[in-house]
Length: 215
Image (cartoon, rainbow, N blue to C red; front, side, top):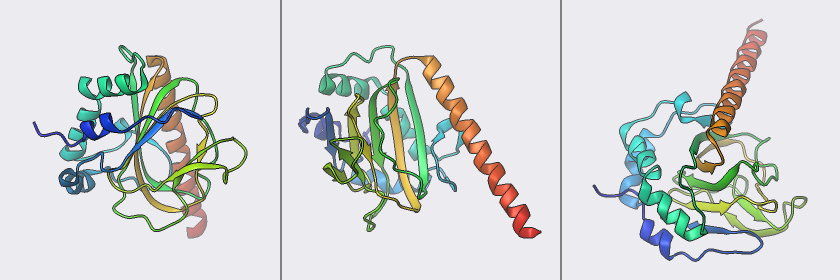
């Protein structure tokens, strides 16, 4: 089976260790795989993160997820970050749109071990929506580097108390797959329930807004 992912490019990309551990791998999703993945990417009409079980997608996207859940993929990240992820569950969410409220500075929750972001946007012109890795939790301009969310790019980091990141406001389509290894299955269940409740609330607000406009 021909892989959609360039794990060799990942293995040869150096890990930056300060002020926290991260690396960026452009072209991580191979060029020849992107058109099919793009076609089969989940249709996400609203802002927010959605667990895989809450969206529908085609076979090429399913194959991508299968590769990301493979033992080879896990072992590559274990070697890169020098961490044992055996028996650590994974958690995957997808985004299709960004709102002006997204992008606030944060570090990710303590229950996340490694965060992986795979961007799937064919082009990116806006200065907003480009993730910034930061030196502090108070200044969006204190930038280590900025990551354009262009198609095929991978960003991965080890969650820590200073793994600060955020981005300038942006509203519109912004496709990203977020993959985390987390501390326990309880975390996965809690996060899925939280995302499900958040999606339901957004749907209800949209329905109420439509009723008001109709009135």
